[in-house]
Image 1 (spheres, rainbow, N blue to C red):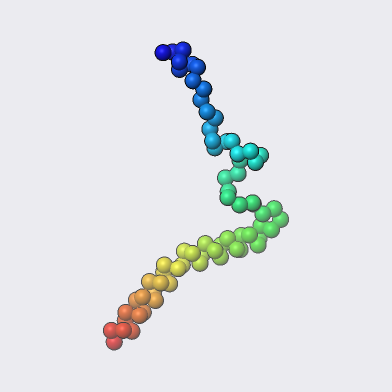
Image 2 (image 1 turned 45 degrees about the vertical axis):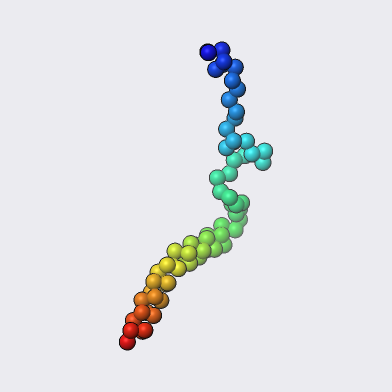
Length: 69
């Protein structure tokens, strides 16, 4: 039994086998010299995405109060 366990070959972790060089944890290329532009675009994107539910809720509440007058 021990000989069988020793003979079984463990496959390498798929996380580190990319074939593209080193491992990157971000799904996009990090900007080199355009950090300010990237920061502004990222902040705008995240702020708009975060505010959509609040804008929709306010619109719904406004529509309900206007409809029931």
